[in-house]
Image (cartoon, rainbow, N blue to C red; front, side, top):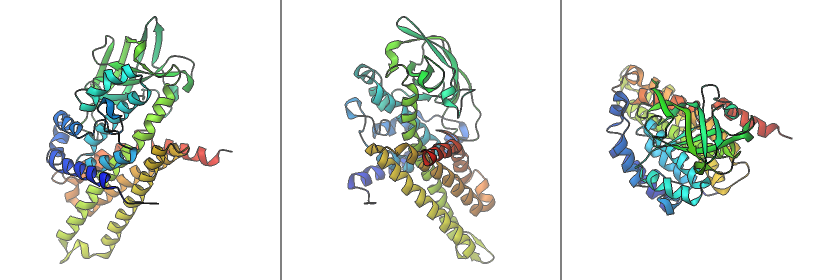
Length: 379
């Protein structure tokens, strides 16, 4: 068991850390306040290989591993979890095309996606199908060389702004076996979008309903075979859960580092906060829990890279722990800052708002427990 990063991993970790410090952190508060989607910053990230981290290199991807991606997303999220999280979703959608698309599909969409000339969204959740993803209702009825889509997807990151939508649709029987995956391009007749959602956090990425009304999509846009869509969606989510867990680690680490600096500066009762043992213990617990979550997430990433049969369960464990710990550490960081942490003059409240949704998306943490419990109790 070697817990040390390779020289190459340390190198791109440093690149990601420098990019976060120089290109994201100075602007993150403005992106949040003004609800700005930072297109140019994202394209600069793409130029470093961060838009197709585990996409193959023949279409512009970096060809790296899931563990490598976790390192990158943690660093980016120290500056802006919201922007890092959108980038993680874009990576997930691009990987699905890379993994399940044929060569024509890969060449058609991925070079532009890996440069972020175009943006991608992942469309699974519906107004009536959240945790019950296999109960989705959006229909894709085949008519000759096209599918005709009718239905809607909810809470879609990039909704209304993305150029490529990887959409799970029902082409057959009820349940998971009747689901297929198609790629829908923005501008397709019958594709429209709802209003931009007013969210607690994640202000630097647009979120909207994606609506299909007699939307005709070529059969050639289907990824994989009919009936494979649920499997494709779940395989995408294994990596997505690692990515969002890594974003929680990064945001929480920023809160921890800010708390340490604040405790060494702030004085009460004639002493620095760092001299109060009760606060020392809280900081120690924050650091310990964060490190434990990071180790589990890195192990799950290594298992996913290796194709381990229990990788899905490990990814669920890692996502559950990292996102719960991340939010708790950020909440403790706000408490250590006192009233200052509640103001927008400090980044803590933004980090807290951004990290809260990580316990809900990519499968709620309750669903992560369902996945884990089923594995533990199977005969």
